[in-house]
Amino acid sequence: MATVSSHILDSVTGKSAVGIRVQLKHLTSDSGIKTLFDIVSDKEGRIVEEVDVRDGEYELIFHLAEYFSVDSASVKTAVMRFSMTDNENRYHLPLMASPHSYSVWWSE
Image 1: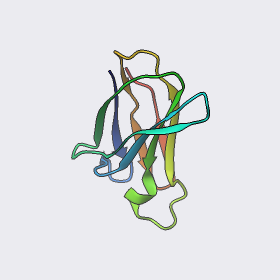
Image 2: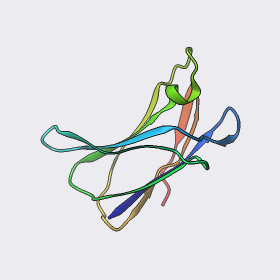
Image 3: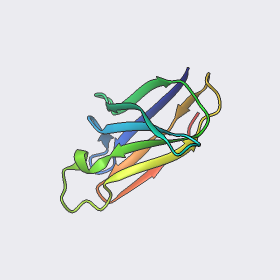
Image 4: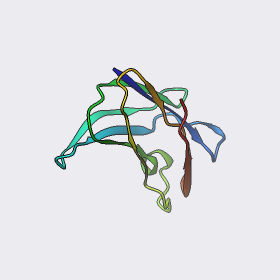
């Protein structure tokens, strides 16, 4: 099984973002959407889950508005759409976030 992981950083406090809700969805070629996991980041702002890679694209969704609890937050979610092709690989997608912006990068 492939491993999907992330380290989420709160750029307002400069610390790891603890308790952010993160979902991974599989978008299939027949327009179906399947949720593969729905978890929260741990005490170090990290998630690590194993998934079975199938054809199609994936979306990793970070629910930022719930975390920042700011009514004026302009960024409600951060969504990364990507492909996975290797069931033995680790896919690490770090995120740095604030109520009004986020930055992502691909890391292996």
